[in-house]
Image (cartoon, rainbow, N blue to C red; front, side, top):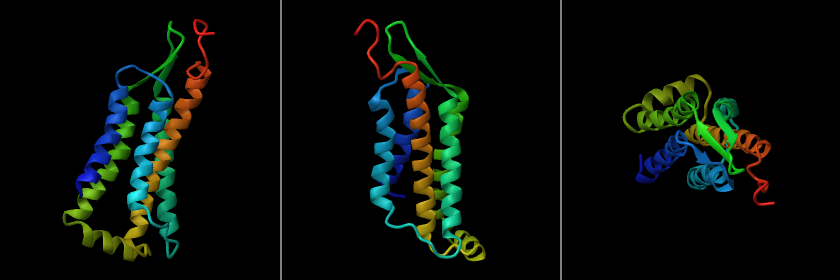
Length: 171
């Protein structure tokens, strides 16, 4: 793994760990994780292979990521405070679910680059996954699904709590 890959994974872990403490919910707090994953996609996602069962693998990644993202968003409390702004606080289950997603991808990367390559090749051949690009696409799009789903859930919950509208004091 490269230093960039480690930094991306650490940044995604930090996103939720920072939210374990109560934080104001704003556009930046929602867009930052999307920016991190978008950067990773520009660096590593060059195509989405369609041969064999490649699309099935990608679909599993996207589905798993989206499910984790929705659940992470639902297990993050969003409340409007006395100052009129919405605040979010990731609960223990939200943090655990986020870490499961990021941790799974991180563990796969470590395994693949430290001796697990041949086992992944055998698995891929047995399941008609045609290239390592399919794994890359599945993992990157899993991260995208997780981040976008979490952002959508928190954004909608923040909107209903008044995060993106002027408070009474500001009106």
